[in-house]
Length: 457
Image (cartoon, rainbow, N blue to C red; front, side, top):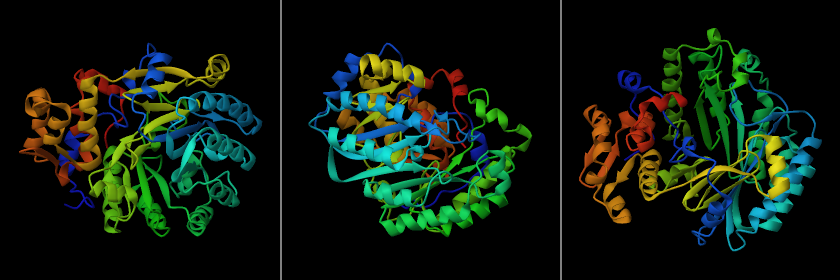
């Protein structure tokens, strides 16, 4: 069965276009609580000692404020603030590394904020520290998010020298009016040069991030951006839905509601984008993501071994994920943990306790079962119910009787098919995979909580 296409059904999409989680975890971060203790975290670190380790480093600083952004960031042009941050981060890294002395690191990702806020000297300091404290497997995947506005081209050479082999570049939109309205003016020619330089330097892949639903954006203007992006032939593309939630994100209050495209126009943008990208040979991975057929994500999905975590889709699903830095989230053992989100509080706690743990949740057996079901559906659009029965020693139809009732509306609309031992998401249902997964989410039985999420489309 091909995963390279979906079937667009306007009526069905409008019917199910309500709010829901993105399932970078199950349970979602809404279930995290401050009663989660450092002792629980330490215990989780010993739970699966055979697992390789994936590291996430959060760099919160940005030179400029992008009005659409909902990330945890600090706006500054003072690079000495990054030195202060690295001092605290070093304390946290050394303390956490002591818990994983026997583990091999197979993946490292820098997110933010803007990780490329760091100077070459600061990057070298941080990478030297990480390599000194952790055992990196040869050929480990090392990736970073890049803002093309505040970076010199030879920074890519430095990153490559430090071992980075994957890039994710924030493009968002090439239209100048759109860029100005979200305070993100950038040079298209420079982005083209970056993508080419990355290929010349031997980076494994380059991902380009786009957003649809931005102010003054139209289907035609986005189509023009997509056309120019395709000329660069990136290995992966992310096309995110702009979720306008100004009550949650203060920066978004600078965006006028009147400038935003209507919901119907946004659907046209998404439909045409999917048709263009799949027509150009990209595989629809799920929700916002596309990859060329020979990319590791696309191969993993076709083989049924794709995973998902707080970093999104990944081929490294059997890892424990250790997040370090302000607001960073970990998936260690059968638990999730998050660091302090406020930078001052992060500094104070690391200084006093050498860790920044703020909140978390320990997963019970039901959480583990439902997490596996949701992960299989959202990653691979199919679920082997017999495998779930064997792994967790249960009868699927009995255990999930209430969930199957909720799933029935999708079955009736021919979006999902239940076979003996298997559930398949049909091509017409793949854009609604979040809704389908919600049927198995016990924490969403109280429908009133959906207002805390963005719409699925």
